Length: 77
Image (cartoon, rainbow, N blue to C red; front, side, top):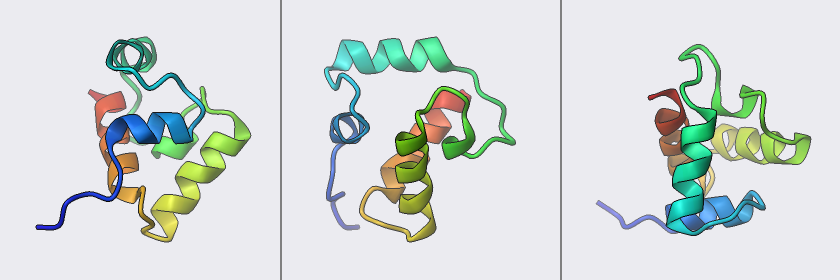
């Protein structure tokens, strides 16, 4: 199995969010649980540019897609 290209904290940095462990946990706690039916890019708290980035990465199965999927799972739990 290949190592991921990016780390989870780097996804938060890419989204323009604080990327230290405490901030990531606070973000997740503040925004979950989200409905299972929502794609991560459809969750209501993203800016337009954040939602676009998340959608595009998943659609093109880009470098960030695996981490975007992980983020979606964490936000639904």
